Length: 273
Image (cartoon, rainbow, N blue to C red; front, side, top):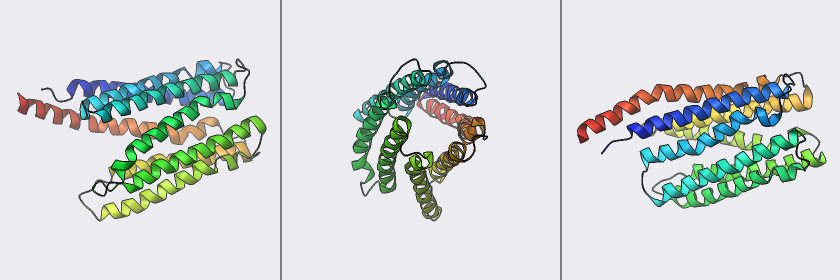
Protein backbone atom coordinates (compact mmCIF):
# COMPACT_ATOMS: atom_id res chain seq x y z
CA UNK A 1 0.00 0.00 0.00
CA UNK A 2 1.33 3.48 -0.92
CA UNK A 3 0.57 6.28 1.52
CA UNK A 4 -0.42 9.46 -0.26
CA UNK A 5 2.74 10.44 -2.15
CA UNK A 6 1.16 10.70 -5.61
CA UNK A 7 -2.06 12.20 -4.31
CA UNK A 8 -0.08 14.61 -2.17
CA UNK A 9 1.77 15.89 -5.26
CA UNK A 10 -1.48 16.25 -7.18
CA UNK A 11 -3.06 18.08 -4.25
CA UNK A 12 -0.12 20.50 -4.04
CA UNK A 13 -0.24 21.19 -7.79
CA UNK A 14 -4.00 21.78 -7.82
CA UNK A 15 -3.92 23.98 -4.72
CA UNK A 16 -0.93 26.01 -5.92
CA UNK A 17 -2.40 26.47 -9.40
CA UNK A 18 -5.73 27.58 -7.93
CA UNK A 19 -4.11 30.00 -5.48
CA UNK A 20 -1.82 31.56 -8.09
CA UNK A 21 -4.68 31.88 -10.58
CA UNK A 22 -6.88 33.57 -7.97
CA UNK A 23 -4.00 35.89 -7.00
CA UNK A 24 -3.53 36.95 -10.62
CA UNK A 25 -7.28 37.37 -11.03
CA UNK A 26 -7.51 39.70 -8.02
CA UNK A 27 -4.62 41.82 -9.34
CA UNK A 28 -6.19 42.06 -12.81
CA UNK A 29 -9.60 42.91 -11.34
CA UNK A 30 -8.01 45.69 -9.28
CA UNK A 31 -6.34 47.10 -12.39
CA UNK A 32 -9.63 46.99 -14.28
CA UNK A 33 -11.55 48.59 -11.39
CA UNK A 34 -9.22 51.61 -11.57
CA UNK A 35 -9.67 51.84 -15.37
CA UNK A 36 -6.02 51.10 -16.06
CA UNK A 37 -7.00 48.72 -18.87
CA UNK A 38 -9.68 48.58 -21.56
CA UNK A 39 -9.96 44.78 -21.45
CA UNK A 40 -13.46 43.39 -20.94
CA UNK A 41 -14.38 42.02 -17.54
CA UNK A 42 -14.98 38.58 -19.02
CA UNK A 43 -11.31 38.51 -20.12
CA UNK A 44 -10.12 39.81 -16.74
CA UNK A 45 -12.07 37.04 -15.00
CA UNK A 46 -10.29 34.16 -16.80
CA UNK A 47 -7.73 33.51 -13.99
CA UNK A 48 -10.51 33.48 -11.38
CA UNK A 49 -12.50 31.04 -13.52
CA UNK A 50 -9.42 28.83 -13.71
CA UNK A 51 -8.96 28.97 -9.93
CA UNK A 52 -12.57 27.82 -9.47
CA UNK A 53 -11.85 24.87 -11.75
CA UNK A 54 -8.85 23.88 -9.62
CA UNK A 55 -10.84 24.13 -6.35
CA UNK A 56 -12.82 20.85 -6.66
CA UNK A 57 -9.75 19.08 -8.04
CA UNK A 58 -7.79 20.03 -4.91
CA UNK A 59 -10.67 18.81 -2.71
CA UNK A 60 -10.74 15.54 -4.65
CA UNK A 61 -7.01 14.98 -4.16
CA UNK A 62 -7.28 15.92 -0.48
CA UNK A 63 -9.93 13.26 0.10
CA UNK A 64 -7.90 10.68 -1.81
CA UNK A 65 -5.17 11.28 0.78
CA UNK A 66 -7.22 11.49 3.98
CA UNK A 67 -10.49 9.70 3.26
CA UNK A 68 -10.29 7.37 0.24
CA UNK A 69 -13.65 5.66 0.96
CA UNK A 70 -17.03 6.45 2.47
CA UNK A 71 -20.32 8.21 1.83
CA UNK A 72 -19.10 11.42 3.47
CA UNK A 73 -16.33 11.67 0.90
CA UNK A 74 -18.76 11.37 -2.01
CA UNK A 75 -21.16 13.86 -0.44
CA UNK A 76 -18.50 16.51 0.15
CA UNK A 77 -17.13 16.04 -3.37
CA UNK A 78 -20.62 16.55 -4.83
CA UNK A 79 -20.98 19.69 -2.69
CA UNK A 80 -17.60 21.07 -3.79
CA UNK A 81 -18.26 20.46 -7.49
CA UNK A 82 -21.70 22.08 -7.24
CA UNK A 83 -20.27 25.13 -5.48
CA UNK A 84 -17.49 25.49 -8.06
CA UNK A 85 -19.90 25.22 -11.01
CA UNK A 86 -22.36 27.72 -9.52
CA UNK A 87 -19.59 30.21 -8.73
CA UNK A 88 -18.28 29.87 -12.29
CA UNK A 89 -21.80 30.61 -13.51
CA UNK A 90 -21.98 33.72 -11.32
CA UNK A 91 -18.61 35.03 -12.48
CA UNK A 92 -19.64 34.61 -16.13
CA UNK A 93 -23.06 36.24 -15.66
CA UNK A 94 -21.60 39.01 -13.51
CA UNK A 95 -18.83 39.92 -15.93
CA UNK A 96 -21.19 39.83 -18.93
CA UNK A 97 -23.50 42.20 -17.02
CA UNK A 98 -20.60 44.53 -16.19
CA UNK A 99 -19.55 44.53 -19.85
CA UNK A 100 -23.16 45.31 -20.91
CA UNK A 101 -22.96 42.24 -23.12
CA UNK A 102 -26.00 40.85 -21.37
CA UNK A 103 -28.91 43.21 -20.68
CA UNK A 104 -30.34 41.86 -17.44
CA UNK A 105 -30.83 42.81 -13.81
CA UNK A 106 -28.37 41.93 -11.07
CA UNK A 107 -31.08 39.82 -9.47
CA UNK A 108 -30.75 37.44 -12.45
CA UNK A 109 -26.95 37.54 -12.41
CA UNK A 110 -26.98 36.56 -8.73
CA UNK A 111 -29.11 33.42 -9.25
CA UNK A 112 -26.03 31.10 -9.24
CA UNK A 113 -25.01 32.58 -5.88
CA UNK A 114 -28.39 31.70 -4.40
CA UNK A 115 -27.86 28.16 -5.61
CA UNK A 116 -24.42 28.22 -3.97
CA UNK A 117 -26.00 29.22 -0.67
CA UNK A 118 -28.58 26.45 -1.01
CA UNK A 119 -25.79 23.90 -1.48
CA UNK A 120 -23.93 25.45 1.47
CA UNK A 121 -27.07 25.11 3.64
CA UNK A 122 -27.35 21.43 2.72
CA UNK A 123 -23.70 21.00 3.72
CA UNK A 124 -24.36 22.76 7.06
CA UNK A 125 -27.32 20.51 7.81
CA UNK A 126 -25.24 17.43 6.91
CA UNK A 127 -22.44 18.52 9.27
CA UNK A 128 -24.65 19.65 12.17
CA UNK A 129 -25.31 16.29 13.91
CA UNK A 130 -21.61 15.45 14.04
CA UNK A 131 -20.55 18.91 15.19
CA UNK A 132 -23.01 19.08 18.11
CA UNK A 133 -22.18 15.56 19.25
CA UNK A 134 -20.92 15.89 22.86
CA UNK A 135 -17.97 13.63 22.07
CA UNK A 136 -16.91 15.91 19.20
CA UNK A 137 -17.77 19.15 21.01
CA UNK A 138 -17.62 21.50 18.02
CA UNK A 139 -20.67 23.61 18.77
CA UNK A 140 -18.72 26.80 18.01
CA UNK A 141 -18.04 25.60 14.46
CA UNK A 142 -21.71 24.63 14.05
CA UNK A 143 -22.80 28.10 15.15
CA UNK A 144 -20.31 29.75 12.77
CA UNK A 145 -21.47 27.68 9.80
CA UNK A 146 -25.07 28.81 10.19
CA UNK A 147 -24.10 32.35 11.19
CA UNK A 148 -22.25 32.78 7.90
CA UNK A 149 -25.18 31.34 5.97
CA UNK A 150 -27.60 33.92 7.36
CA UNK A 151 -25.03 36.71 7.02
CA UNK A 152 -24.39 35.89 3.36
CA UNK A 153 -28.13 35.62 2.60
CA UNK A 154 -28.79 39.03 4.16
CA UNK A 155 -25.80 40.58 2.41
CA UNK A 156 -26.84 39.25 -1.02
CA UNK A 157 -30.40 40.52 -0.60
CA UNK A 158 -29.21 44.00 0.37
CA UNK A 159 -26.56 44.02 -2.38
CA UNK A 160 -29.06 43.09 -5.11
CA UNK A 161 -31.46 45.83 -3.98
CA UNK A 162 -28.53 48.26 -3.82
CA UNK A 163 -27.41 47.46 -7.37
CA UNK A 164 -30.85 47.28 -9.01
CA UNK A 165 -32.85 49.82 -7.02
CA UNK A 166 -30.17 51.92 -5.28
CA UNK A 167 -31.80 51.08 -1.96
CA UNK A 168 -30.21 51.06 0.54
CA UNK A 169 -28.19 53.94 -0.89
CA UNK A 170 -25.08 53.45 1.22
CA UNK A 171 -22.84 50.45 0.64
CA UNK A 172 -21.91 50.67 4.32
CA UNK A 173 -25.43 49.47 5.18
CA UNK A 174 -25.12 46.63 2.65
CA UNK A 175 -21.85 45.47 4.23
CA UNK A 176 -23.19 45.34 7.80
CA UNK A 177 -24.07 41.59 7.75
CA UNK A 178 -20.62 40.55 6.51
CA UNK A 179 -18.75 42.94 8.81
CA UNK A 180 -20.81 41.81 11.80
CA UNK A 181 -20.31 38.12 11.02
CA UNK A 182 -16.58 38.64 10.56
CA UNK A 183 -16.34 40.52 13.86
CA UNK A 184 -18.29 37.81 15.71
CA UNK A 185 -16.08 35.15 14.14
CA UNK A 186 -12.95 36.97 15.34
CA UNK A 187 -14.44 37.29 18.83
CA UNK A 188 -15.29 33.57 18.93
CA UNK A 189 -11.74 32.74 17.81
CA UNK A 190 -10.26 34.94 20.55
CA UNK A 191 -12.39 33.23 23.21
CA UNK A 192 -11.60 29.78 21.80
CA UNK A 193 -7.88 30.62 21.61
CA UNK A 194 -7.90 31.56 25.28
CA UNK A 195 -9.51 28.23 26.18
CA UNK A 196 -7.21 26.27 23.87
CA UNK A 197 -4.07 27.76 25.40
CA UNK A 198 -5.13 26.19 28.71
CA UNK A 199 -5.37 22.79 27.03
CA UNK A 200 -1.97 21.75 25.69
CA UNK A 201 -3.51 18.79 23.84
CA UNK A 202 -5.39 21.04 21.39
CA UNK A 203 -3.59 22.80 18.53
CA UNK A 204 -3.85 26.56 18.02
CA UNK A 205 -3.15 26.52 14.29
CA UNK A 206 -6.78 26.23 13.01
CA UNK A 207 -7.90 29.07 15.30
CA UNK A 208 -5.00 31.28 14.22
CA UNK A 209 -5.87 30.63 10.57
CA UNK A 210 -9.48 31.65 11.26
CA UNK A 211 -8.28 34.84 12.96
CA UNK A 212 -6.02 35.73 10.03
CA UNK A 213 -8.73 35.01 7.42
CA UNK A 214 -11.43 37.04 9.17
CA UNK A 215 -9.06 39.90 9.99
CA UNK A 216 -8.16 40.13 6.29
CA UNK A 217 -11.86 40.03 5.36
CA UNK A 218 -12.72 42.74 7.91
CA UNK A 219 -9.90 45.01 6.76
CA UNK A 220 -10.88 44.54 3.11
CA UNK A 221 -14.46 45.45 3.98
CA UNK A 222 -13.40 48.61 5.81
CA UNK A 223 -11.21 49.75 2.90
CA UNK A 224 -13.97 49.00 0.38
CA UNK A 225 -16.53 50.96 2.40
CA UNK A 226 -14.13 53.91 2.62
CA UNK A 227 -13.58 53.85 -1.15
CA UNK A 228 -17.28 53.63 -2.01
CA UNK A 229 -18.75 55.98 0.59
CA UNK A 230 -16.01 58.41 1.62
CA UNK A 231 -13.25 58.79 -0.96
CA UNK A 232 -12.74 57.05 -4.31
CA UNK A 233 -9.05 57.97 -4.41
CA UNK A 234 -8.15 54.74 -2.62
CA UNK A 235 -6.73 52.46 -5.36
CA UNK A 236 -8.46 49.12 -5.79
CA UNK A 237 -5.11 47.35 -5.46
CA UNK A 238 -4.80 48.77 -1.92
CA UNK A 239 -8.19 47.32 -1.04
CA UNK A 240 -7.03 43.97 -2.39
CA UNK A 241 -3.80 43.95 -0.33
CA UNK A 242 -5.30 42.02 2.66
CA UNK A 243 -6.65 39.32 0.32
CA UNK A 244 -3.36 39.11 -1.59
CA UNK A 245 -1.45 38.90 1.70
CA UNK A 246 -3.77 36.10 2.82
CA UNK A 247 -3.06 34.16 -0.38
CA UNK A 248 0.69 34.63 0.08
CA UNK A 249 0.38 33.43 3.69
CA UNK A 250 -1.51 30.35 2.48
CA UNK A 251 1.17 29.54 -0.10
CA UNK A 252 3.95 30.14 2.45
CA UNK A 253 2.39 27.83 5.04
CA UNK A 254 1.86 25.13 2.41
CA UNK A 255 5.48 25.43 1.24
CA UNK A 256 6.66 25.15 4.86
CA UNK A 257 4.52 22.12 5.76
CA UNK A 258 4.84 20.06 2.57
CA UNK A 259 8.32 18.56 3.28
CA UNK A 260 7.16 17.31 6.70
CA UNK A 261 4.08 15.63 5.21
CA UNK A 262 6.11 14.00 2.45
CA UNK A 263 8.63 12.70 4.99
CA UNK A 264 5.73 11.21 6.99
CA UNK A 265 4.34 9.46 3.88
CA UNK A 266 7.79 8.14 2.97
CA UNK A 267 8.25 6.77 6.50
CA UNK A 268 4.86 5.02 6.32
CA UNK A 269 5.72 3.55 2.91
CA UNK A 270 9.08 2.32 4.23
CA UNK A 271 7.35 0.55 7.15
CA UNK A 272 4.79 -0.97 4.80
CA UNK A 273 7.43 -2.34 2.48
